[in-house]
Image 1 (cartoon, rainbow, N blue to C red):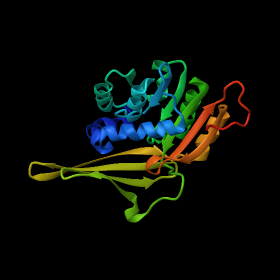
Image 2: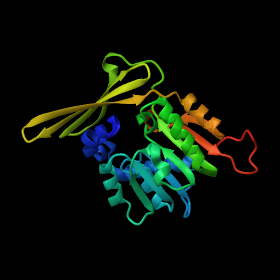
Image 3: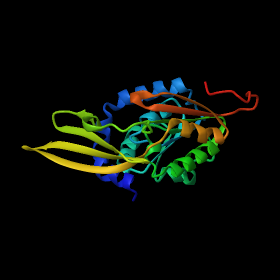
Image 4: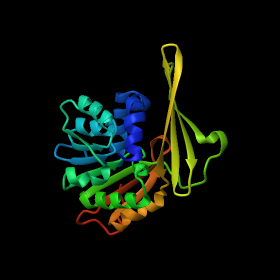
Length: 254
């Protein structure tokens, strides 16, 4: 089990849905984002959602008629996705997202890496490999969409290293980040009220420091037209589009 998978299975998995907040609100936000980007969700369209978590994007697409292959290394959020899928054509898969071509479709109208999925890979080389594979399965006109935090700039210091994620009367989740030359060490601090006292646990893992321009450059090298824009919750969104016959050579994703 990788460091990231162990962190999510044993530490964040049990509180993942709580951390994300109201699920139906998350589905509505995901639908709005995907429609704005242009991700197809009509009957017959196939989308691969890598690092899907509890599946807000997968459920939004599935309810709108798409077929979604939802891949995640952690089984707890996938169990929740299975319960929430209803009659939608959503196919949850537990496994390493780097190996999605082993258990996913040969072609897709879109590949998603939402919510910092890319930075959870172990190295920049692993990111490059995944981007190459994702671009390789896109059909003509297909979209690759990734959102992630830009950790390529200067490191926060002092209290700025601590990020409040969510809290209520029984649970507090705080994140601490420490910058290394090529990675960011992330420590998730959880306080939970049990009977008459607070219990504390912590776990750490590393994220890759990705530069948006580097991600865009890799996708362009695979023949995609790319744009970089602001995403939700302070993230960067990178959108790449596979050309269709008849497209002009310099066409960009709309």
